Image 1 (cartoon, rainbow, N blue to C red):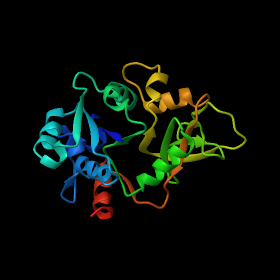
Image 2 (cartoon, one colour):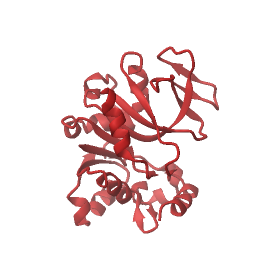
Image 3 (cartoon, rainbow, N blue to C red):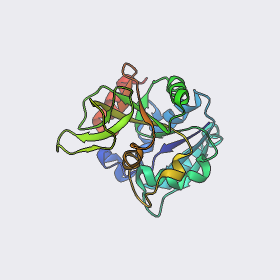
Image 4 (cartoon, helix red, strand yellow):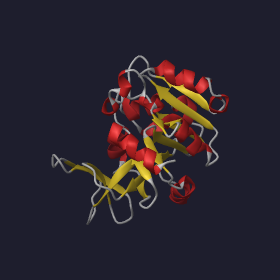
Amino acid sequence: MKAMILAAGLGTRLKPFTDSHPKALAVVNGKTLLQRNIEYLHSFGITNMIVNVHHFAQQIIDFVNDNRELKSLVSFSDETDEVLETGGGLMRAAWFLKDSNPFVLMNVDILTDMNLERMLQRHKSGNYLATLAVSDRATSRYLLFDERDVLCGWRNVKTGEEVIRRKADNYYQKAFTGIHILSPEIFSLINRKGKFSIIDSYLDLADGHIIIGYDHTGFRFCDAGTPQSLLRASQMFP
């Protein structure tokens, strides 16, 4: 099985560090976010990964190439011409991922001890198009699911904006935590081009395909994308 780590973002929430470095190289207790997530994926037997790069791309490439263990696991997807967001970045890396059924996609600034093997088993149990890691935590934007954990829509509780693609008697809101397991069929179904969010494509496809949520509430999780959350991550992840 293969995996992609999304590391091309500008990391604006992590300024001033990202004025001169990519957020992937922010350090938590002596290890970069990128190294921690490569090791996390490797702990579940994933030995073939791709990392997309844009912001201070060469720093990421040099960091990996200077580490013999990491270098053997990682390829790169070049977005130095334009950062393509989550959806566009995934599509650019299709050449690498399309022969892996399924594959993992995750954000570089997510730290967790979630049992990825259990999530994979859930994904395979129904041969779903996508399985999204979610949890019960406070946020401004939520994914909406029905009683079977099937994706139905999206809600922004700050603005009141809501998108419903699949009807249900009741909707249950869960916070997305930036880890996906995907069938390579996704590449033939996405019709957006260029720069776009993968969440928008999930909503495009939700009415005709089964995309489910996998609730990992109870496992450690930190969105380490701000200076404050990096400090919190250092307390959570030795």
